[in-house]
Length: 297
Length: 294
Image 1 (tube, helix red, strand yellow):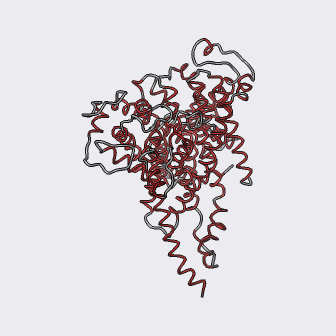
Image 2 (cartoon, rainbow over the protein chains, first blue to last red; image 1 turned 180 degrees about the vertical axis):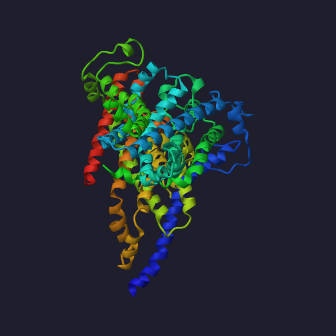
């Protein structure tokens, strides 16, 4: 009886505490982002949270045209926003295509084929992906010099794709494994060719997996910083990540000094929009990634 | 003849096997060869420019001896240890909390929660430090305003507490990794377990420690290993935020390797640091697997 009362009091209060903690977490997550959003539309934004007195699009105009805003000094460095966006889009879409094609081919093959040493190969792929990037990224410069991949957007995309590939093969193999082979066999019995089966039966069922892989590889390539930092030397070919760094990088510890906050926030928003858009398109599938298959050690 | 017949019988398998080739070739050229090269370069005096880029000299363990006597290396070891440990704890705890919210029946608004929880993870990493400017500003920053509210002295986050600031940014940006892994693990636990436990009068806490935790043991370990690997590897935040300063207090090992190779042009030495990172990841992964009892 007393336990019952305790429960009746404890349950709702627990819920209240839970919601309070949740609210604190939301504040922690959202406050920095809210500042970014407000400051992008603020004609005189500073490094502090405040509601803009008037609403302006000048900052967005500024980052695309490079025209300094009236009454303020221009950025120390010129903006090449359109070119950065083009470069980033090129890198991200080439990397996405490469990863989706290569990973789905490899994962399908690994899922349907049995051969001696298969688990060894899977472990090898996992280990390659797990190698810290600092343990392979420095010689990449020399390797890419040999291939002519330094200062080459396609080369950068290939290198990024190769670094994303291992995990994506594992994720996709999980999805292909969950499609019973009988389903395919039935399709063959009914007179579908191998290829038609692949296109009409397997790919639609593995669709969510491919969507997740597309999302993850786009996010990875669109936001990539270290690999372009090492492989791209000329400013013409900067993706947005390097572009932002070139405009707003500051001396050690000088954050908050001599930075034009409005354009910075506008640029950040423009940079984030494609990532958010592709997340929005694929969000339904993201939670379906079962990492259970990765538990095989 | 025999070979031709074998090929005919196994044609489908052979075609499937060729599907593997593009991925494998890419991985070998752009991932495996650089890894092996890192080890090889770390035993040479290779430089990024000039004659020593093309004709490096084999110098044995000289780079590693230099490393052991390099005060900045030990400084960045210490800094990396602090950074990784603090980030691991924060990212894991926040991620677990978020995963519990996402999977619990008690709390409403899952779609909103998922969207908000994933926001920092989705926006590109380069802008994370910038987004935090308003939080960390010394005079009007949000954090200092909160401190003032509680009557505490305001801090010079960027200058005096650079490490704490980077850790905060990193855990803000990266907890979603643990959240994704743990949430998908928790949803795959059969509902019946909890129903039975409830019938037998198990409390919420008991249900969590006796059912959820043991069943997500491997995902917990997996997420910890992934977090550790990401933190020791990625120098984007410190590069954007402090460039390792002030006085090497945020010079992570990865940033140190990059600086050695691309600012001081000592590619061989940078590779030695990179190889040390690989060894650290390897040892700590093994340790975590051992601790997890596998």
